[in-house]
Amino acid sequence: MPPANKSKRGSNSLFWDLLTFDRLVTGPVIHLIYWAGLGVVVLFGFGVVGAAVGLALKEPGVSSMLLAFPVMVAGLLVAGALVLLWRAFCEFYVAIFRISEDLRALRQTSDADHAAHRARQSQAQQQQPQQQR
Image (cartoon, rainbow, N blue to C red; front, top):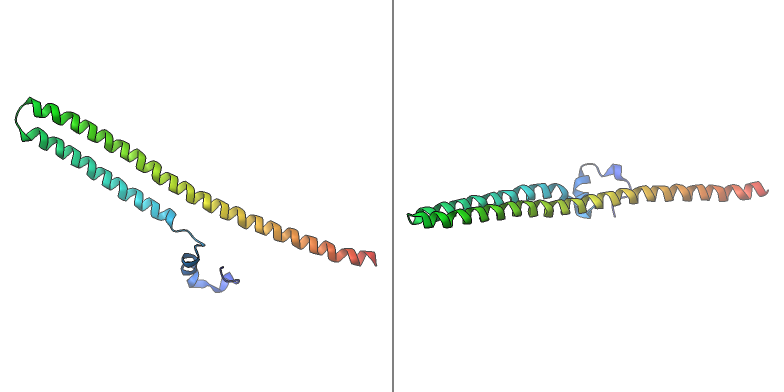
């Protein structure tokens, strides 16, 4: 539970948010993970092209070229599919964390509305005995 007086937290606010999970840091980290994953997929694509070229140069002749071309095409198709899957995976996590942020905002709004409603009810109850006198 965060301290009751938020204005006194000052520079410890970020530290407190990280300790209590009041602020989620995974959203910005997902973007870094996405770019790192794309880098891995690009390295895989370069590896496929290098393997295809190495296969074509291994033995002279048309048969090695005919074998290298489908290997390169299939590898690049797999790399393209990996890019799409990685994007969908990361978007899923970004959506989950945005839902979490939206739910937190709804909860705060709801709590404020309930507090205002309770305050109005207590005022009405205090005014009723005064009117009956």
